[in-house]
Image (cartoon, rainbow, N blue to C red; front, side, top):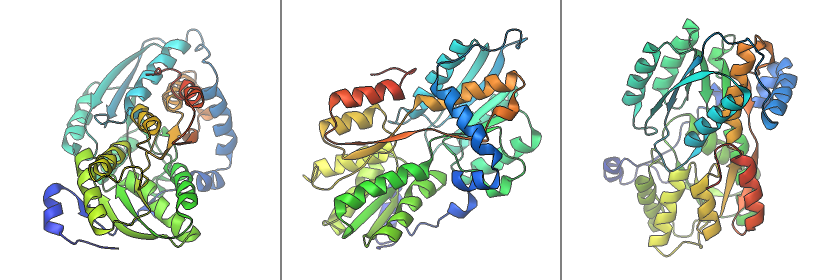
Length: 369
């Protein structure tokens, strides 16, 4: 795999061709966590059943005052995952009759670390009961550890379903999302069939951190065990569309015979599609999405994107609402440490009626565009 060639040029663009250092061992997979904590298996199964069904009203007289929740989201991106999550959360809270007050803070992923730190300070000044955040950059981990030690607000970590090993014995209130490893292995199986186990491929990572490790490294390791496919180039893109486009143009110049380009996020995939269209290679070299939001599904139906793993998106907003309801009712022992929602593989050529059925399920609260 080519490493650090044209380093200065691509450093200026914010794109680095890398040998990625895996951080997978820092995290406990859902399967391993359930082995270590067998009581969590039944707890997650029952909780998942609650999430999938219509909401039931909170016990009368439970609340003396509205519960306060702060959301600090890296939601300024093409992907509508974060926007839909907060919509579905509010809709479910309304449905089950929980009184609440929400504080919302949005930023760009990867590059707005300082802004997120400022948003965190602002949110904590409001003394919320629950705080919803994510874990991707190393700076996030230090902030989160302080909150876990303090114990207030109760911490919900979204878009992560793999508990940290170093936090065993004192985990956050809830990990919620869609397991990155599961989705990545579904896409790996798709590409295995497409490439028939031979040839070269490239990977477009997100930023250096959790998402890249879980989506990118899991994909690479899975293919190593299953096939002779050779990884020839990989890039960090900061989840930026233009950087992803430039990285893809470099890949196409250096490795024009790649069998496919694996993208770790929506904005990354759209940038790769831009480059393939510009070079006349769109439809020739497959590229995937990750998450199955509205922009990806449009690209699938237009024939620009070849496949994606579609999250049943609104379930994670519902899961957060239901965890808070159970907590308010004094039923904390019924809340799993980890909630991981469902995926469906969506491929180019899917019938419109089939896609509409999936949208109705995935976006049952946030609405079909």
